[in-house]
Image (cartoon, rainbow, N blue to C red; front, side, top):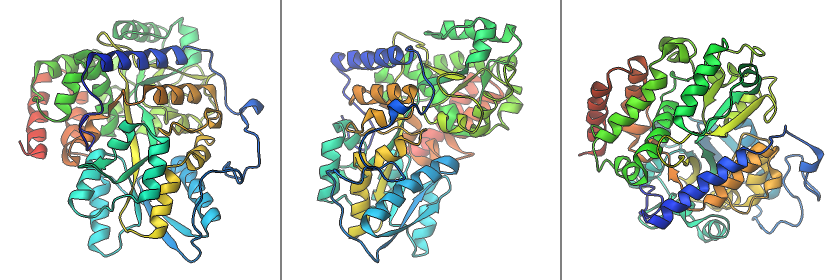
Length: 465
């Protein structure tokens, strides 16, 4: 395994078997009967604060920080931001510190650069890409984690999740939030009316889409206005079809985007993206649909929503909660179907990185590495932690518990989001690089060769080769 998030695990046969086992576990877990949120059985025992954090019996000891003020920057908005603020409130309660949440914009590295140039960097930033962590280190913005934070990481995280937050062997990031990005959510009523079943393979997914279409509902909702979900579509198809070795090579730009394996993956994607009747609003409508709306339009409108299925990670639950649909009853989920011999297991995440070293910033990083912090947000839904010591009972429903269990069980055997490993100019900037190129491909899925040339040109410029 290399550092900086370039390769998340070895390429041995045993590793490939472990990836298959993780995918099988996820598939089996999600095939179980799914229940709705918030039963009494889900409530943990013991004294808890209003945020759900344990007030007594915690193994984590934090310093008193009365008079300390901290700023934490992240790109999170809406319920995701509100829920994270409850975690910060618990830290304030325990330490006496005061924290201000600073809303950031994508790309966050550019946002942080302007803050640092103005002499006002936040104390801690939540960085959504390993490439962004490396950039922060290369620019000498980031501060290594202290002994307490590293000890908490070693106790609670697999080696793979520690390594993805390290640069050249030095630990900089605490991966507080993870995402399972190999899931497709569907409107259960639409499937029932259509007589559709959950597919396990790509061919079965195409047959399910046709069954849904024949029932009078558009099969897919695709958020083309946001480039990053399109990269996730590609990564799942590519990982399953081309395999983990090729995935690692493309992630590091060791092979070109004009490679035949990319041709095959884009051609496969076009089987859905290229059928305008399969995409809500057609390509033009999809390119005007932002991610939150792509979710809500799948679960509003009763049994005649704008679409039957939406692909994205476990965090979709936050958006489903904005509708009347109940996760596990009205909104169900299945693993991204296998395109090749193995179902894909793709993950993403957000890491806390210290930009202004202080006792308070180090204490916050330590807290975010603990189960105490993760369990607060886990109970609020729409959140997944890579922390292996988080009590699964903290998650609000069986869907989320099974997804969390599968992630933890995978250990080091997963692939991190490819675009998040790339230089931000290629894999993480709205209107540029891979985001823009795949938006162009969604608009014209017949031009596979043209898009490959553009992807390769943009990648070569960003990677410097």
